[in-house]
Length: 209
Image 1 (cartoon, rainbow, N blue to C red):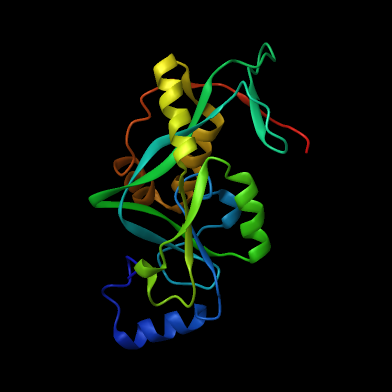
Image 2: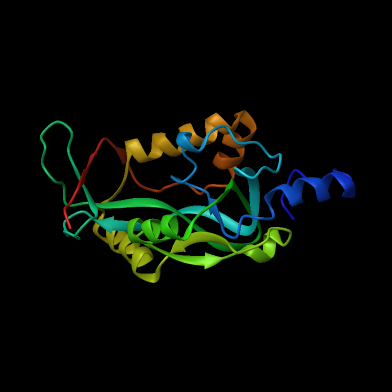
């Protein structure tokens, strides 16, 4: 069950869930997908999305991209001052199973076209269904978890001493949770493992198809 609804009466729950039951697919975002354009969501269940907790996981900086490699329609990073492309592994947020763990995030409706676009964007991840934790929603609840290759790139960066986090990514995620409220920002910080690498200024660039 979604956190925040435990104290509600059965009648209130029935009304709230009936208002969102027509959405066939949902997305649980716990990192960069918790973004200001989503709007100021709350833990009140709403058809436009709501804040929730995903149990049995902890947030980590578990995946990375190799900034030396070109991938069509994907990103790379340059130094904002020199414009040079540093030979680093850029790490991103991930979630991993852990007994007793819980991560906060947003649960929002998503269309098949949006999922297809996200699948192309989230190159370091696999998409899995965690709908069993949101049994009252009428449809799957998707979440992106680190792929074996994405996690190996993080380990490779660590072995080479070349792993970093982009400051704009770090700040963007923190800004998204801050806009959800001070309590959600604190929950994000306490449920996220340290990144274990420098946070550096990098400018994002996009490669053509």
